[in-house]
Image (cartoon, rainbow, N blue to C red; front, side):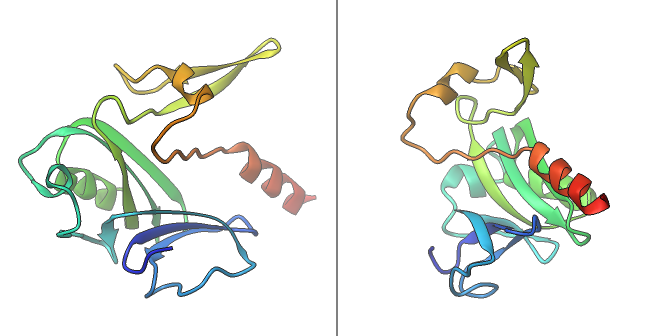
Length: 164
């Protein structure tokens, strides 16, 4: 884990938080199940202009497909993606949705993939939610870049257990 980077942490009890490594967390604890680092897009409800962003992420005039993940004050997880966005535009949309902390994920047409897995008989297919999305079959192979996915099934199962 690198100090100063935005970090999405999934805890063993199902909570998800986004903060800065070195400020909000300084070490991995047994309560942490998963973590993903990236540049902060939103910190304490404000857009982060960060010199560590590459030019495409910082330049407010460069519009590309972008994606980000963040959390609201109430702990809801928000994933956002869209075409022809600036980093500032993506942050403003997420802040309007109540996001207080978020990290910038992938960007550019061939990198952002958002969709829903769907069972079809004994096969699992992937239904893209974004137009012109990269080939979902690429998920089956190896990649030189980071990869993350979010599922609802785990949380639903946890919620159902808590109700019984």
